[in-house]
Length: 108
Image (cartoon, rainbow, N blue to C red; front, side, top):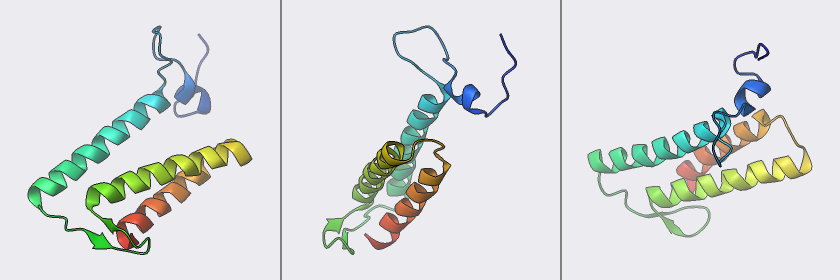
C-alpha cells in the first residue's frame, strides 16, 4: 500500500472496509456530525427547556429544531449546487454553509 498523507483527499476518500456500503472517513464524519448536532440540541433543550417559537425573516414561526432542520437542508443544497456548478474542493461551500447556519439560528 502506498504512503497516504493524513487529511489529504486520498485519505478522506479511502474505503474503510469491505462492505456493501462505501464508508469513507468523509461519510463517517458527516454522520457523526449529524448525530452530534441532534444530541447537542437535545442537551440544550434539556437544560434550557422551551425554545419558544419566534418569527424571523422567513415570516414563519420556528423553534430550535426547525432552525436546525432548515440549516441542514440549506447546507445540503449549498453543497449540491457547488458540486454541480464548480466541483471540488469543498472548503468554500463549507464556509458558506457555516455562515448559512449562523444566519438561520440568528435571524430565522
